Amino acid sequence: MAVVKIRLFVEDDLSTDAPLCIAGRQAHHIGQVLRLGPGDLVAVFNGRHGEWLGRIDAAGRKACAVTAVRCLRQQPTEPGLTLAFAPIKKTGTDFIVEKATELGISRLVPVFTEHTATNRVNDERLRINAIEAAQQCGRLSVPEVGVAKRFDDFLQTWPMTSPLLLADETGTGRPLTSVLSEFAEPGAKLAHGLLIGPEGGFSTEEFVKLRAMSFVRFIDLGPRILRAETAAIAALACWQALIGDW
Image (cartoon, rainbow, N blue to C red):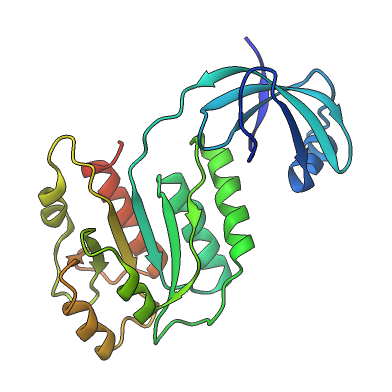
């Protein structure tokens, strides 16, 4: 059996004998960290064509030449869940992106609310974190990292036909399992979203706007006050277990 020491996300199309150029951080990791060279094997995926076995033909400090050999796994259909979240301190945001990727999220959207602790995010950093998490956890896609939006813009652009589950820290939401049971019909393909607020919670004005939106479903995550990171992971785990691909 072929021994594969690393999984790599690539942008290129994958097919038998397709040449691939691995550059940047990935090339450095292959050649300088793992010390792989010509003849060694890697696994590659692009989110479209499944996972492929790749053979290293040449390895340098800045680039590696790889040839796709054969398909190892076909591309699966994944749940279309969006996680919208208020960015928090750097390590907390990194944690959310990493764990949400492992839990099968399809799209990540930073949302700046009135009480959000920061007013900027590094899109490239989020993308890198998502790629590395996807490589590590074995999934065959990388979640899309959407452009950060202001709270009002996010609500105005959200699709009216897609339920948006809101983690309500005020205690007025319905139990998450009860809300999810409404969307648990076999074969249902409805896209969903999950919105996690900032560490300071949504403002009164923001709650008024949320309650005016017909697509928003207020959910309760139990009797304890959860940190933003914990709320996101807990809700995603429940969603996957009840109506996702678990």
